[in-house]
Image (cartoon, rainbow, N blue to C red; front, side, top):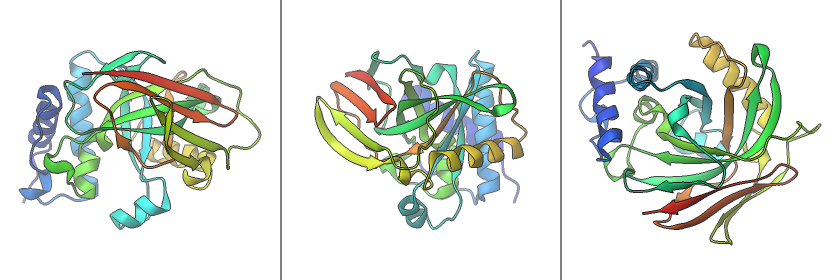
Length: 245
């Protein structure tokens, strides 16, 4: 049976725009992961058609625990647009989100040829568009890996090693998650290379200034209805956002 990639992309896109959950795509359509990436491409094309710009890529399932949970041995990836960017310290409203969660990450800024030129602490806001926050691997890939927003801290020179820096996630000054950059494929550098390879395999050519989110260093936590959220990465500083209803 043929898959209507455009129709599936429209369903997920409309859910995100309306802030209303939809049934899993796989509940009515048999999807492979390869199919799901075609849905993702069509989904992001809709956003670009509304005037958004592609500004980078993000990785998901970069921890061994998450891979085991989903029964896979490969990371997944999604696309970032300028509309997802939140300035460090700015406010974000939960009003148009469905199941918002937040996680601390490491971000790379890319230069010519996809070479990393700087690194920063980051926050990613993820928001699955599926009812009851339930989804299969193809569902989450089709949903652009739940991408909703990202915050970048100040860019820093890339240190000699990134493999075991401490990471904190704070909500209103209270530490809610602790972890290490080692949770990101053992080393964020490894995640960077994997992400560039996957994106390149899909025909994306990284542009100078693009961002690569290397993956979460801790579990994601629900985004509070209001408050201050901050990620702190050892030697890299922090990134924060204010949450408003």
